[in-house]
Image (cartoon, rainbow, N blue to C red; front, top):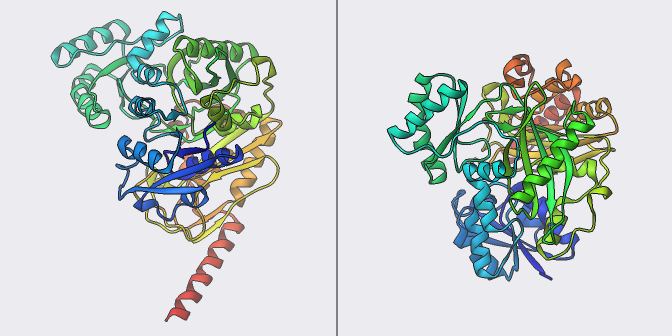
Length: 480
């Protein structure tokens, strides 16, 4: 059994993985770039390896990651999410170096990372999909193919980068004029972002719900699902709020979606933890969108309702262990909601607040409350990375209990210094449509009033800000 596992990531997800590694009585090796030298993830790891000045480029350097693993004696690598997590070249490099990659094999990652190949695999397995094209031919011929597809299926269409992911490389097209303008630009952006200019078209599902299924598969043929999640509340195709189970799905519909997800995973030859994502239209029809070949940010809500430690299970599968549970052993209970507390200004198009220092940090707690974060009082938020500070996840036995608990937690959560998404979320949890569970991917566009709030809306926030001001003033006077 491996004794050292390198975590090829940073921030809250690195801490989450490090904790699971240490609970298994193994050693966790962290890596970091210079801007992250004050980050908590390198403080709690058993060992930390500096891989370069960055920013970002060293976390994305496969050769440096493999070198760090060898240097530290790590026998396995966990990629987390983002960065190299869905890059088949990292998995391939691990295979060639004799290092265990905690995730699916490189061929599966490559096949599912190519959206057109993934669609073909699903089509062959009879998985329902939104109508779409294969890779469009480069140049004028590709534009002609796109126009022909539009003539058959109509607008709006979604122009997507074949190698895209995480909400990137996606453009909505509402008419032929936009198609002509956006087609060459999309290819250029795909090339810049993914080093692959391939694009394809899909018919748009109008204002769908974004429903996904957590699956886990071992290396011995056993594949199970851990229920559904609703990730419909998004900004710029990136999720803000995640809910488990998906709201307003009948037990029959939820079971059908989950069984389809298991079928899709088996068709792809999938092992380890992954997520099968679907779009659900207003008529209740669902369509395959993609399989994310990694741990998801929102895995916390599934863990809360399923009672399964997904990261611990990932590691044990990669180390050759068989799943100790079957589908009949999985019991889903209650409701869970996760909100991403980002250092962003929602009123300014969610502009990141990197470079600001957290002067006060007071977190909520109590029954059914989980926090996954990496920041602390006095921490200066790096400008170079993602704006996520902490994930707030709450559990309740009923939907109303869960929302009430979430509201209380947001009222008790104080982060002074940067602007955050907290006051925006406070508006959201009090919105009647959210309370009813009535939301889809158009929610933010149709609820502009959510952006009408005061920065400090509670007595707790006001008191915390005052204490911070007094504290800082006292320090400055003493220094003078």
